[in-house]
Amino acid sequence: MFTVPPSKKFLYLGVMSQRAAVRHADTPITLDHDMHAFPRTGRKLTVREFADHVSETANRLWAAGVRPTEHVAIHKTSNFDITVLACAAARVGAVPAMLSPHLDGPTVDELLRRLQGPTLLTDEAKLTGDLADVDLGSSTSRVLTVAGSGPGAIPLSRFAGAPERRPVMLAPDEPALMTHTSGTTGIPKLVVHSARSLGARGNWQNKVAGFIRKRETVAMHVSYVHSRMYLGLAVLQFRGMPMVFMDDASPKHVADVLVRHRPGVLETHPNSFLEWEAMLDDPRRPISNVKYFNSTFDAIHPSTMHKFLHATDRDHPVFLQVYGQSECGPLAARTYRRRNALKADGRCQGYPTPGMAKYRLVSRDGKPPTKESPGYIDVSTAGRALTYHGEAERFDKQVIGEWWRGGDVGYRTKWGCLHLLDREVDVIPGIDSTLEVEDAVLNRLEELTELVVVPGPDGRAVPVVCTRDDKPLDPTRWAVAIADQPPLAEPLHRTLAELPRTATAKIKRLELAGLLAVSAPTGGEHEGPSEAPDDPPSL
Image (cartoon, rainbow, N blue to C red; front, side, top):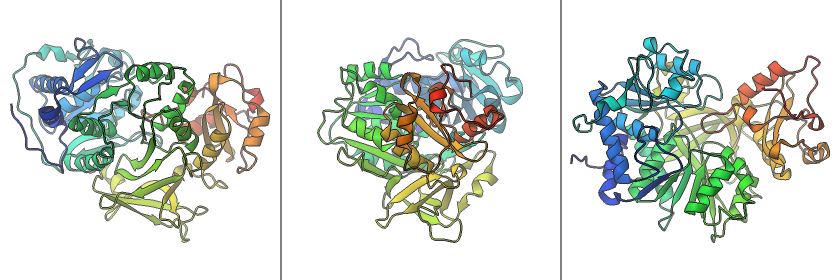
């Protein structure tokens, strides 16, 4: 077996599982679904079997003509097999470009063209669905299917039994992986990571995992196309932590999975935690054995953390909130406990890790950054990405020497704690922080499952609300809940399914605001809480 001397500085996706299997070959990986690309595997495999799937798939990709430094776009139906495909592409020295299953056809077409003729790894469901009207012949060099078939596509199974290939590892500062930004502000940008930048992020996350003193089962529902998934896989496999990956995020299903496996660690997107509050009343108490909760990707509401921390029987449970961006990785973190989660300021992101990350605040108006006049948050980390593929000038505009200006605004407290108020594009005049308003109101109204404050067609701050079981919102309770908040327009009642979201369940605020502008009544009236229709119009 060919092995590569490991290095803590670099993370090579193509060999990480092979390396981890040297010590933790039998560590279990459990899924809540069958893998499309490996239907005979079932829902239970080991780190060794994962590594074998990566190696076998890499052999097939090479036999299909994929070569080092080429781009391999992976866009298929959501499934854990996406992680195997990405690692396999990396193993032959290609650069996997992860395109979310949630992207629509025109967006995928634009990204494929930006990649300049990549190999596309997909499946029949995508070829006959979102990609049916996309001219793949002009935007790709070849199309390979891992499940089913399609016009002009070659089944990857045709190359089964291909000769074994040794892994190819590019230089540590060469492109190694592409993920895309959330797309909350338009067409996603393709973020280019290297083995060095991934290694720096992995080291940060490995330090965090080091606080888990015993071998705990880790349950995750995380986007398979996000860099966090690959860093998580690396850390968990190298530490020999049993893993459970969930594809179905519906609260009832998640509760069933958690009851079956009783994990000690639970990680998902902030908005998924918010939805999962619905399972906290389950008499089986699915959260009872969780000691560590982890939420990355976006801000999370204090009331949500409070509820989960009080739903477990474990002593001294911890909720970790991490602030970072796709371009720079994790920057700051803060832990919450039962005693302080509800009292905590949800805008507080904590402190950067000494020696690994730092930040500065830069005035936007000539005044020292404060809550009332927040400044740009510039960050410096070893895990900063290389560039935006095909949009280098756009990336470089946000680089200021060692600093990265990501578009968030905030301020520093007298204790040195970083407070994130909003993205600059989401700032609404007259409101210090839309996120702060959302935190406060969600804490006061148990019936809310989501609240997003966006600018309306007339410039006023419009709260868009979702409720449990889509029941009408009580106007009296709403009035009391917002009495001490900045002026808000009448709330618009929508179902959660109507809100445009990213692969990591973030609400696309700009798109939502645009949809509200399109659907606004000509008279400028706003839909009040007592007037929410049984079947609200689509956004």
